[in-house]
Length: 479
Image (cartoon, rainbow, N blue to C red; front, side, top):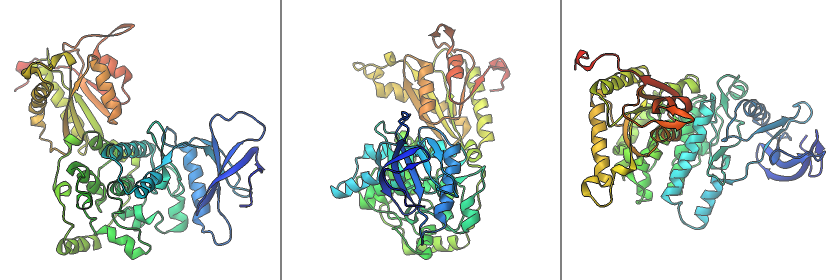
């Protein structure tokens, strides 16, 4: 079955040249044999099925076929066609132009340098966006590694190779047919080691491994080849990145080591939360994870080993449902021509939203005009103006009593309030926007007809929008 060569025609596809041969499949560039123009460059992936190849090759083919047909978006290749498993199994999909993250790591090793901080952060954000897009479609990749992630020229990260993945709405063929932990050892999460599949936080662990390698040039847990070596990540703590690369910022180490927690519940609850911290490093709370330099000592490692010995991993709910339970919530706070009653109503509505989703992350946002800051007057300097509004936002949020891991404050500058809120929501994977139903003194926006800021946001937002009305006069609110 694997005797297909360059120049052959398979079901109307002309094999032009083989671009890659891996342990599980061969990949060839193809085009339509009848000269029909291709909508985009295409490749054919043919699973290896020679004597000695493992059953996971054909199982992986079935899984990848299931998933590529079901998922969509710019972070996955587009599906074209598939071959009959009884004659010649193959997948034809989009050929994605780009550089693999493994190539980026190899280039850094060849030049004895590390990628710049800005590059590492951009790659982390790209990986988090791609993973979140997949998780919203009830898919966990479970084999994220540098070779399986491409960086396109527009900086979009595309995920490849779904042969080990999990779709919550389809039978888990890998678990049912092989009954063993599968994956790439260096990037496999602890729960995968003991056979638990379907938790999106496993992909967050893998992103943490990649970020660690980008920063330090090393793998946090090596590349074990035995089951015992794999299990060590359930209690062994990696060396702090700052002990290997002292210039690593504390906030970045905090993010990386949180991703690498052996307990899934101590990692980021969703890739959107990881993206949020990478986008707003000034809002990252630095704990012992971020500040430490020395590796974990023997006594603490022993205690971690004892705890891991009694640890039980259980499958999570549907990935999409799990991330819905820990959304990013935006509350828009007006800063002028707003009554105390309206501010109170906004806080009450925000409390109700957060009460239904205890793991949510709240972004408290206000939008000011660029004209409010000045380069010549100290009291109107950008830093002083922002400090005043940040203090106002913190005062408003104080009754919510949220810890710093679950709340952050943002002052945006724009002449278009609605556009600024929409861009913030899209860039931070916001799931819910809470804002006042009235204009609260904000100028009307022009869109053929006059639209208030709340209506414009509600019409164009990529997420749920809750518009809050003032129900009672302030004197009746009991405050």
